[in-house]
Figure 1 (cartoon, rainbow, N blue to C red):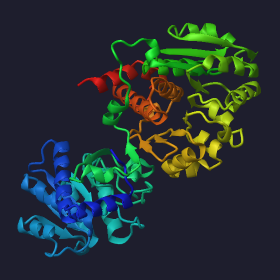
Figure 2 (cartoon, rainbow, N blue to C red; figure 1 turned 120 degrees about the vertical axis):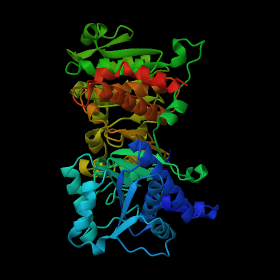
Figure 3 (tube, helix red, strand yellow; figure 1 turned 180 degrees about the vertical axis):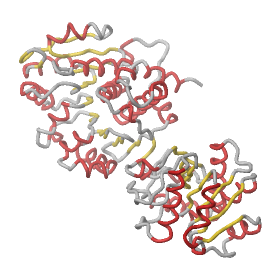
Figure 4 (cartoon, rainbow, N blue to C red; figure 1 turned 90 degrees about the vertical axis):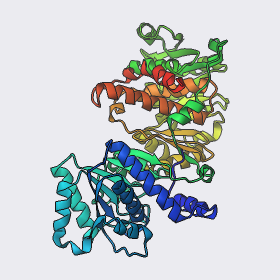
Length: 515
């Protein structure tokens, strides 16, 4: 499913009109689709008091259509109009013909009636402003939103549903006006908008549903950004033929772990194995092998020379190169930044070998010390930075990275010629050719040590099975997030451990393949 900017959405709507689906028809489709989603979400809306906040533009027009259908299905609808509507507007006229109750905000001095309506409403529909240019919310509109916010604080059971996106949320950047309401449900129309996955606005979205409004799918084909959905993942994940052997599913050579981060080696290797890699080999400091062998019984081992106990020596680089063969290199999880380890990584990556690689954690931090490292490295790779590591790699302030996550990741992928996975809530995956994927998941349970090691291992395991770097990265992001969702459902947000994800990964894959 494509994810669009406001301008791309306008272009798609214009092209729809050229194909015989004018804006009036799209509005009818949008209002009906939205009303159906509200009804589905509530279970029943018969006799339910529904307050629809109607703005002056197309978003308000969609709201009028939705209000008409909800009324026809038995809801007790009241329209609260911000901005004047006349009978020249067919949707306003149809609402009047049905004698749907309505109030103009300009005639409600002190919002007295609005407060009464909010006190009795079960559902408030925000159809005030859509994807137009975001301006500071002031005056009457600010007052209306403030009253709704106060009512929600007093009565948390009051359901707020945003039509397309919450009023005051920028459709492109995710910037949110202070008056922007936090919706319980956002039903976005046609395609999800970029700003719905960017903070701080993403925190105001609530549950997100994408409503089909009849736009021909081919009109979105040129959009390079897509949402990483179960449908996408099911199509992308590798097949498991009945006559397979371990070589069929590839080999991962994991150069990970150090004396202070032994668990990272376990989590990364187990992550690769749990997504189906045929063979995982752990190359790490010699003294760590007895500890890890007790945890990783299915993994093979390459003991590497040490500079000191639990620290890989620079002289280990040729040993790893000799063992690589056709393996995918997983490098960096828990390596540490001891001077000898830094030199080891620099020697390993200075070779222009076309090895496929996944670089995480300290591998990225060491890359950041190597000026223009990408110029001498021809191999395909997936880089998996969190925002702090991205700041070190790019030299940009972390605040700028977080405010422009997709743009920064796209620029980095193009410059470096590598796939970039910018981790965090709504993880972003970008390719050198401009393709991008956004995870729809924001799970605070995944904000704990070691979950990134599992993700890096999962990506390497999928890359070893023959997926392209982008598909392996996006597939790993999907499986990791879905596993986190399963564990969150069972345990809640707090106390989720990275190791909880490991046995869940195969179950997520099984679920995708179940008819």
